[in-house]
Length: 168
Image (tube, rainbow, N blue to C red):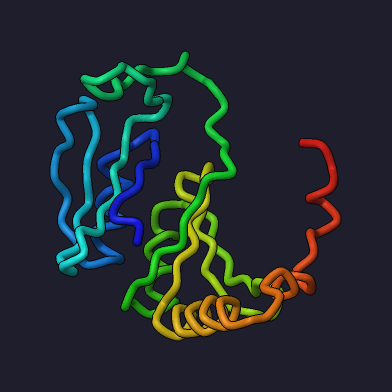
């Protein structure tokens, strides 16, 4: 169980408000990193997303705990880090809310196993949104993997797109 995760955005409050809206959560300030916000979902599991100002990174600081520093302005914000988020909102409404912010959105088939709505937050980083029907597909797929004699076979049909093999 992942209880919370952190991401960054050029407009952290706007991103936090988007997530609070689609997941039925609340936005609060996150003082340890000024200009940051947290979104909490009242689900009894502590589900939360921390949204830091763009360029924020965490670095070790020994026993007192990690500290926040900022990368230089204009640093590349693309990342392989992403997450899937189940929501009870209909896919059309999720896509409309993302489009209203000017963010790219796509309904994608993940190798015939399950579907996601790719929402490209600030057109920079990915979150996979799973409305209830897509979440059911994902949970069925994930559950089936754990029951397989050779779980590695589960993703054999899910091969990279040709562009994946190109240099950025």
